[in-house]
Length: 260
Image (tube, rainbow, N blue to C red; front, side):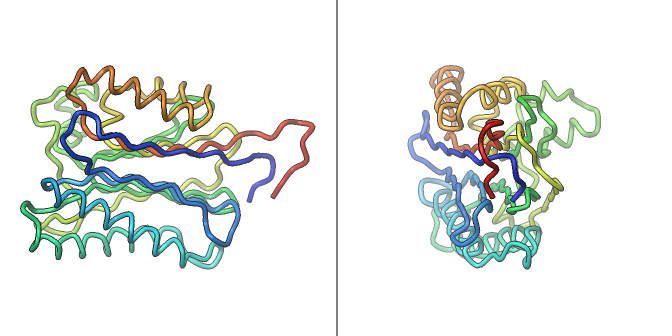
């Protein structure tokens, strides 16, 4: 792992104003290799049982694949692609026993010990990359309103209020084809960098700079709590399930020895 920083992480999950929880979240340290971590959120859809079964399947598949992952020998991109494909196949099979057709989004990142990071997503769950509180980049939603924005038909700040904002063009369990896979690679994260993966139950209520500032100024645990609480206030009793995971690379004090 790159010297000169330490990792700090936290995750959060809240049912908000929905009658049941369909989101899932995961923040895992590698069982054998220090400095290798995975963060993931999955936003299930498909009724009380269908949506939760779908997001549970994503998390279970991620745990199994990450436990077998060998940093330096295996490809992070290949692991994440397998996570999409395996989850998609099993979710489609569970549709037989669900009262509604199950689907799920997924947004996951994997950081290797050398600081390299790969992320991918399907649907409208997002990953944000911040540096010292300022957004460096984020995923693009697989949604109808994102397509409208990309074509220049609406502005980005109109996406959240569009009447068809909840229509997805890609998700796990879709029956019209294979889910789209959007992969992004960061050669090396550095001190001051942070990653946020979250469902639309969180990002819908914030500007990127608001979330970046909270994460930069607080510990991951404090940031998660503050963001969830503020999302609940802004939702005014109509909030969706909330899931988020935060990873921060914190610079070591100058008088501290570098640790691997």
